[in-house]
Length: 379
Image (cartoon, rainbow, N blue to C red; front, side):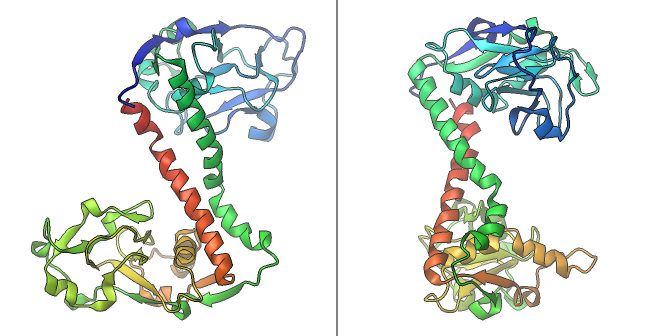
């Protein structure tokens, strides 16, 4: 990204405001703007119609045009700016600010969508919002001031198109992640021809952790060494961030074979933030566990696929099960006697591999998506 030439453009120089009224009732579809779903039918979003019966005085918005909703929420502290993509046209209250790109040969529409999906534009809007002027969550922002805000973009339209297309395609795939829990819950129905069985976790894997007398003193944590120490705080998005790990002396590594870690190990936090799961990959030094983490070792790899079990443990099922065991209280420590009876639903090994790869692919896409803002911020 550093080789791209970027510039700041005033929004009013690249778009024009739309104040087109729906006088001929070209559309009767009442729209609202959601930070999550974009421009969407009120009936679908609210499960009812909010707009007036007579929408002839509303703005008529056509596909590809943008609108700014000045209403604030926890997800959209400075409102939301979205493009109409779902419908050919619709109508919006005149409280919204509607606009379209002046010349799409110079400004890529998908890039503008990507830009307004970040928080880079918030500072500009914040500077023009009248101080303390929030009437029932509606920002007091004049259209003329709104169009004075700036947009950061590559000067080259082709670079805009590459960025816009990349994140548009990625965004479509990210919707898979938003329904990941549902995917797990529906997987058995989708694969109804597959023979599934339910096994206790203790039947298919062993669980070991650093026991009390083996606990380490902080003075034993080394900044460098040959034997890595993995702690729950090193878990990051289902993986281990090796750059944050400490090290220990060889005698501490040798102390317990059951907590010696290798590629393919599945780890679960049992203290602090409970139930975080990580799959170890890319380990380049011998490693052992600090207190507060279980090492889950598969008993028979011919029957159980490691990535399938990792994904299953990472799904909501485990913490739902732990919550049921809380019996009205809050579990602050994940005991082994809770884990041993945790039920794992499993197909045959071949299908486990396919399912594990499927969800691993989604995870990889999510990792790319999480870099989205950084990609733009570090332009």
